Length: 260
Image: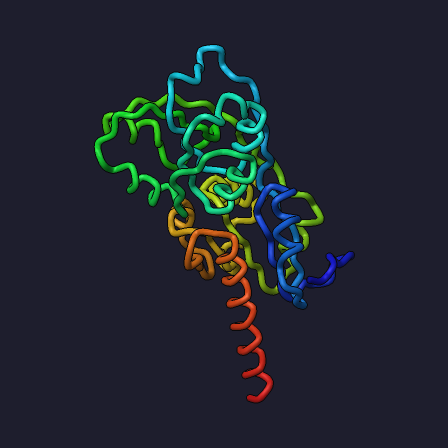
């Protein structure tokens, strides 16, 4: 990955990683090197809520549903309460982290939809849904419709970016090729709003979007993006593979042009 350039020189290819800043930095460090400029593009930051309601009693639930690794700080802080429970988890890496901290994960799935399939049979157990402030799948309602009881606690939320940094805006406008990754429906929503606020909606027609899942790509309201790609599976490793695939495709195209 090349370092970001100063001045107003054009970036031949600019790849923007739209995760919260810490997550974006970790993702970039593991990305194979190339002549492409890769930068974090944090569309939001996380805020965490660690207070536990006095009305939330351990005996009120048997299972805990977790759909994001961002719930871990809350769960770890209150480990003494949650350690007796069985966990149903979205995300294999999140499941591993829960197990590393001593929690009992009894079901794991790649997506919320996949986890919901496990819960399709009539259920009578008591659940706690530990979630973010914004959700794409309402497990509480789903569980109640299946005959179970479910309480919920909000462990974190997102704070969207209000403007684009000037230096990043300049790089976007001057790039010859622009590629943006999307890891959540929330990021898709914020991205389109930011481009509108900054008067940069026209950038869409020359932007390739790489999405973690079809659900995320469907969250984009605008359809005039240059190209849209979806990961084979909804996980980080698949996003790495998709980026490499796009890079390889460009390299082959450039090689063909050299011999024409």
